[in-house]
Image 1 (cartoon, helix red, strand yellow):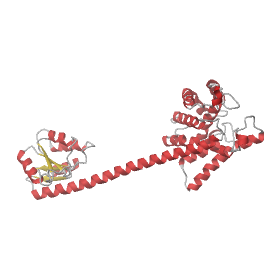
Image 2 (cartoon, one colour):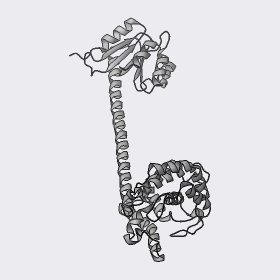
Image 3 (tube, one colour):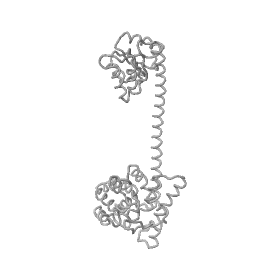
Image 4 (spheres, one colour):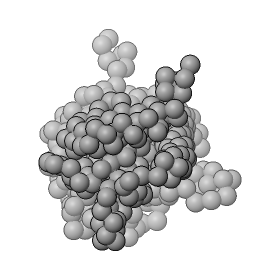
Amino acid sequence: MSVTESSKAPTVLVVDDTPDNQLILTELLSPLYRVQSAGSGEEALAMATSTDKPDLILLDVVMPGLTGFDVCRQLKARADTRDIPIIFLTSLDATEDETRGLVLGAVDYITKPVNPSIVRVRVANHLRLKAAADFLRDQNAYLEREVTRRTAEVAAVQEVTIHALASLAEARDNETGNHIRRTQHYVKALADHLQRHPRFVDELDESTRKLLYQSAPLHDIGKVGIPDAILLKPGKLTAEEYEVIKSHTTLGRNAIQHAEDLLGLAVPFLRFAKEMAYSHQERWNGSGYPQGLQGDAIPVSARLMAVADVYDALVSPRVYKKAMPHDEAAAYIVNKRSVEFDPDVVDAFVALQSEFQAIASRFVDEFPDQHE
């Protein structure tokens, strides 16, 4: 099989409005390459933008209609043709013409009448350069795809791990069901709503909102450390038992901190997990625990979770209580505005009531004894 018949041979597009010049260049290059020819700028554009694109273009400058400069400008403006090397062929020998061509993006400039040896060498050199550039571009694209794939894998493993850990806590109390999923989506809804609020615009950028969503399921991880006799007690807790229950905030924060210490580096999403685990029981007026923080001293992540957690506790059935209707739960939240909860977070909750109801319905708990 000859070189010109091989599909692996590079394709060179010769563009010249003079048939004799086309013939000379075709005969000169065809032993080495697949050669295509065009007699006008318009024809050259059509061929260069087709599915069978050339690997290099020898382009006459002076042509009727679209000039070589026009063709070059249009090809370099397109993402799918900007990397095709263009060598200008022209009888013009003014320095400004050569400069203009190179500024437009041409890789070389050959004056007529052409020297066969120079044409072959320059075409070969620029095809080698293009092959190297294409290889690097393909490698970079491959690496970018691999980084994207690996990042997605890490994110997926991270999310599964978070839910597995959170489920350990929820498994201790099988009546909380989909609590972690509901509160996770409540927090996301609140954060998305408040992202442009003057008080929160610096705290709730896109990256932070994503991290909040990822880490929210760990807010009750400290339940793992609470004895069953207290955690699962169906009746009212004693004062001493309540103090043990309250320790789940510190236990959760310490467990996450221990995991981070084992890693030996600070992990952004674990920062918010620690905040929510430790401070989601703090209250706006300072009456919460474990530190008795007040107002803006409470981390934003914990303020969001406080509303999400209390709302879900109110509207969810437990062995010791019936589910509270949404309207009553919403009224409770509103009544505690600026008392237990950040007032602006409560306002966001009020604006998102229908979304909260939709989330509650989407992740509803089903207990067998509810139908007995």
